[in-house]
Image (cartoon, rainbow, N blue to C red):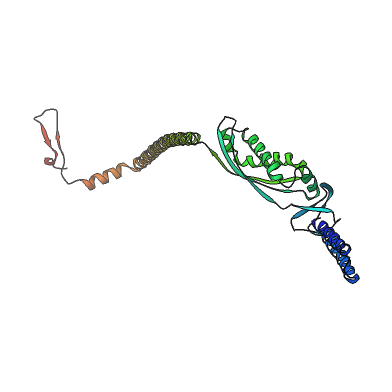
Length: 318
C-alpha cells in the first residue's frame, strides 16, 4: 500500500510539473506525463503483489479492516490499497518459569515449555482480536493460570510422585482454553520442579528415615527367615533321626526274627538228626563202638562201703 501511495505522489508530481512550467516544450511535457503514468503503473503493480514467506500466513487488511481470508506462503495478488501482514504459523516453543503453591501451601518453582502453532484458517480472527503479539497478550497469561491451577491440585509430595502427569494435565487445560483463539497446543514439557530448602531437607530426612525403616524391616525379615529355616532344618534332622532309628529298630527286629527262625530251624534239624541217630542205633552198633573205644582195661567200681573197692581188671575172664 505504501508503494501505491508513493506512486500516486510521484504521478501527481510529474503531472503538476508538466502543467506548471509553461515554457517547457511540448515534447518535454509529453515525456513528463508519460513518465508519470509509467511510474504510477509500476508502483501500482508493486502494491498489488505481496510475498508471504514459507511458514507464515498472510492477513489482508484494508485501512485497518481485517478481511475474512488468509494468504498462503508465496506470491499473492490483491488490491493495491490492501495491506498484507504476516503471522508465523510454524511450531513455536514458549518457555516459562514461575512460582506456584501446592495444595499444602508449599512454594514450588516450576519451569518448562509449551510447543504450539496457530491455525492458518483462523489466523485472521486471532489477528483481529489479539494482534501479532498474541504470545505475550494471550498465551503467557493463560500458561501461568493453568500451570498454577494444576500445581494447586497436588501436595508437594504428590508433585514429585505424579510429575509425569503434570504435563498431560497442563496440555489438556491449555488446549481447551486456547482452541477458540485458533492456537493449537502441541505439547507441554515440565522440565524442572523445585521446592524450598526447608521442604527439600524435610523430604530428604523422611526418605532417610524410610530407608532406615525398610532396612530394619528387611533385616528383621532376614533373621525371621533364618530362624524359620533353622527350625525347619532341626525338624527335618529330627525326623530323619527318628526315621533312621525306626529303620534300625526294624532291622534289629528282623535280625532277631531271622536268628530265632534260624535257631528254631537248627534245633529242628538237630532234633531230627538226633532222632535219626537214635533210630539208627542198635545194640550191636553200640557194642561195636564200645569195643572200638575200649582200651582193654576194666573200670574200677566202688560200693557203698568205702573200704570195698573192686578192681575189675584183676578178675580173670572165664
